[in-house]
Image (cartoon, rainbow, N blue to C red):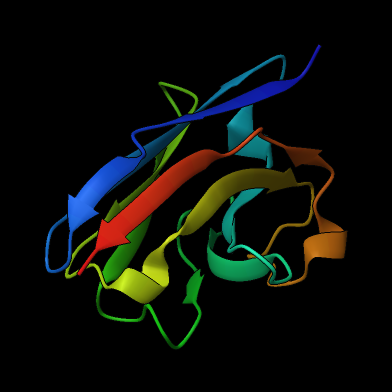
Amino acid sequence: QVQLVESGGGLVQAGGSQRLSCAASGLTISRYSMGWFREAPGKAREFVAAISWSTIRKYYTDSVEGRFTISRDNAKNTVYLQMDSLKPEDTAVYYCAATLRSGPQRSVGTYVYWGQGTQVTVSS
């Protein structure tokens, strides 16, 4: 059974940092490109960041470019999202996802496995 389990969310003040982790079981993430998405209340799930299986390519949505960093540790079967200079508009439930496509993907529909999400709340 494939599971992606996010952790590291919580309450943080604006300007602060958080690191999210996504631990995978039932699959070997070295064969997958991985992504992070977020969903704010009343809004559609949106792309945040993605990393190719080879780690060479990384994509970010414009609003987090330069503030967030996606990385992966294939030996630990874990993906990370380092979030710095957080803003209140970053408040959302954050989800990690896996796709068999070789390159990082921005579209929700290309991902086959999803975690349950972790809440990130940024206070002003």
